[in-house]
Image (cartoon, rainbow, N blue to C red; front, side):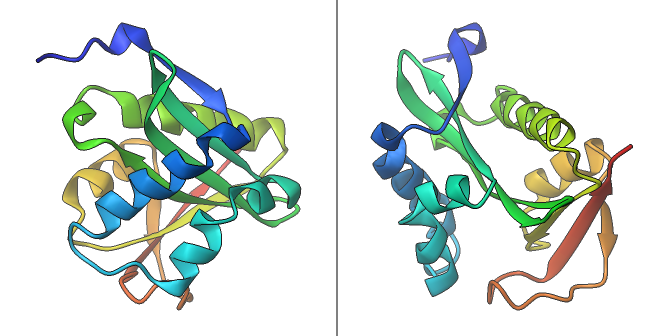
Length: 157
């Protein structure tokens, strides 16, 4: 069945999506790795991301979460883009682009100068997305995730 992206909307965090945030991310992480303690810290407490000045966005189709991403505040002018995933049968439809656009808008509205992310070089499709948006690889200075072997940064105007 072909999914219609025109039915997709991006919405800010609401507590009713807590389980979706966990389930969607657990699914993609466990495709190749194990869920780490640092994952659980963020995934089980999305409200903490909000209270610390960040945001979690959801891609919805008919009020059902099919994708998500978090903007975790790192400092007054830096956010970590994290926990971006799209449900398997919705991938390849441009939903990750919609989520990324929302994250960039959020960062600019919050006067961020930089967005960074930690990823793994085996995630080729994700890497293509990051490259498309202008993220550049920088030295990895984080041990937040055992699976993280690449750090990328986007400098904002």
